[in-house]
Image (cartoon, rainbow over all chains, first blue to last red; front, side, top):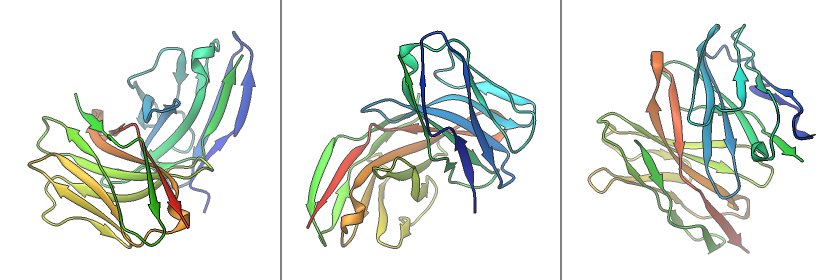
Length: 112
Length: 117
């Protein structure tokens, strides 16, 4: 029962470095999305995808890229890490006609 | 734009008591959905309960119930017979429609619930 799997769980980057946060789901869900959670706040949408090859921006997309080449995977790329991107990142998936979204365990990213 | 407001940053409750976590929302869409998620100290987001705007009855899931008052735009979470394991952060969220049937969740700031033995 893997559900939504995110790797890594923890990461420390230096300012200016790039990296990719991985997200995979095994539930054949159409919709996948990335959120970030900052202290004292709820989650905010970064990017989302409605299927392989189709992505769109959420409310805080700057500094991040996504692509969706398969149904299962939805990686999030940080192009040039900045301290403002220190956050906990959640990947989520959902299916058409269903209500709840399923979340991964989160990735705690620190940019120094 | 849709907005969720949770006015209780923290709550402390004795074990076995019932607790109500407040959530008010603002939307101009006639069709919407409201969610509650639990985030324990381990960090994962756990879905608890869902209420659709056209649902006639309040949603219930075990010890969780959602007190949905549409005219007042409130969707409070009620936890009956609280347990130590209920200590966590609780988020109220609203579904916002995106392209091609996709949905975005708009979250409130959360309420940290602590259950005392």
